[in-house]
Length: 86
Image (cartoon, rainbow, N blue to C red; front, side, top):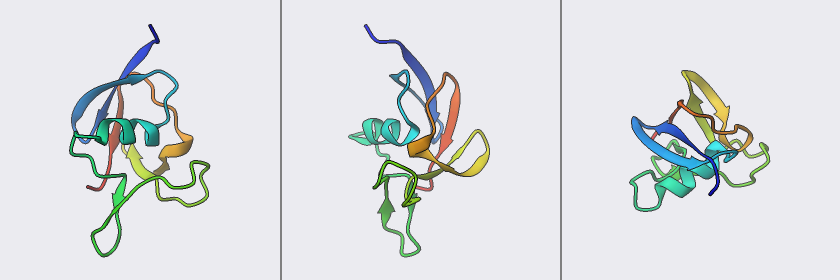
């Protein structure tokens, strides 16, 4: 069985496979979990990771209190706190 880590996404403790990116964790946990993406556009539409390589900046989240972190370039670790702008 693959090692798992616990992350906190928008205040909810979730378990994801180790070495998962923050953007992938949000996508995996968002299905049926009420997380619609990483942020909202200026018109209020949900946005999510698009390119997966840090170019589009659609995966921006707050990680451990640090804003504008690229979720597709950040690996999950145990206890990581992630805030989206849902």
